[in-house]
Amino acid sequence: MFDANKPAVLLDTPIPGQGMTAPLGGRPWQQPPKFSTAEKAFAFYAERLTQENQTDQLLNLIELGVPLDTLADSLQLGGVMQGLHSVDVGILISPAIIETMNQMGLQAGLKPVLPTEEVDPEKSNDPEIALRLKQMAEKQDRNISIKDDTLVEELEPEMEIVEEKPTGLMARR
Image 1 (spheres, one colour):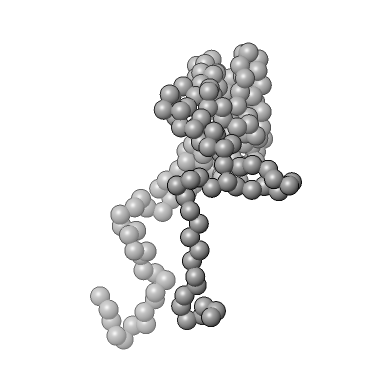
Image 2 (cartoon, rainbow, N blue to C red; image 1 turned 45 degrees about the vertical axis):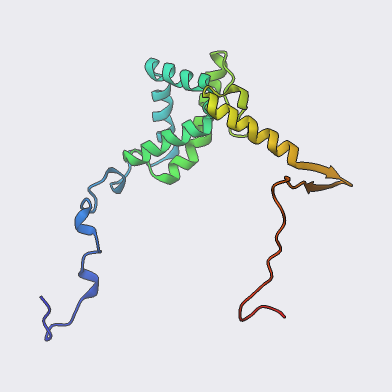
């Protein structure tokens, strides 16, 4: 209740919506991390990835063509949410996790999809996604041509250029 004789302390009030959330420190990521260094966090993931059931699942995902950076990001983000390590440590260990998964895939005779590679539309298991990716690749190839060492985009027949004239208070006349 507001008391006119008592000075108001605005910093001690709850944040709007705070009553509908967990208490401060109630989530795992709001606690100090279990692994505070990149070396300790990577050792945890290396041990986890080499467990037999985890290795089988990882190799199945690599065989399906899931990019390694997607797998590493999912893995380390889950670790952040579980309070295993901080976001910074997760970003630092991502390249090492990707390289570990790449070596595991190569040793199993698979061709892992690295972060720098483009997804091949022919390799996708979902026919609708493969068809859309193939159509987009063909459309991109069709719309771009090189003339006189400059890149020129050709317009599709149904598209036309509409030049908008500036309007408003600051428009030039």
